[in-house]
Image (cartoon, rainbow, N blue to C red; front, side, top):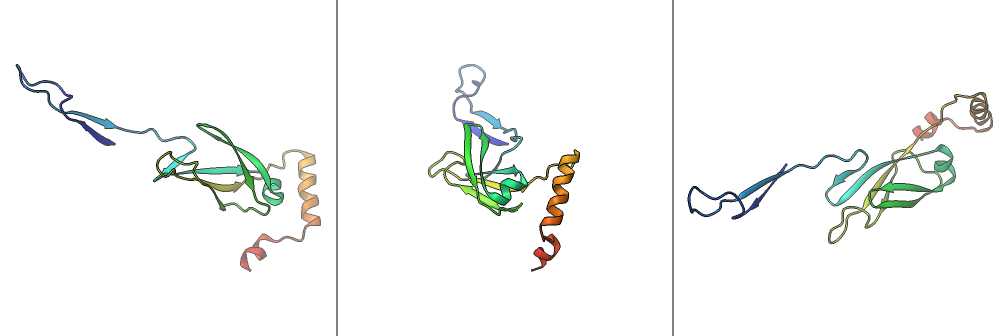
Length: 133
């Protein structure tokens, strides 16, 4: 934690002595989704595969409201998007850094499984070959 000293704001010495200093120890509880890095705020943003492939405008819930962020077409997991001025308020304000995480829907229904099988047949895509290039 951080110690803050307030001079002359503490308890008085015995008798008529002058007041001592008040020491405050401040601890911050970590946020469940946001992390601070200096003035910047970091957030992992989960998106669907079609939002990553096609691009989309997605809502991002922040403590001060909802922000709409444009995801560029072809976004990959691990890509970082910067929203200037939406970090910790200061002079100058920090930025909001969004790390993209593409989340696959489960093949939990026959229809979902059929859609995945159609993609496997129709798309000539090998992620191992793509990452080796």
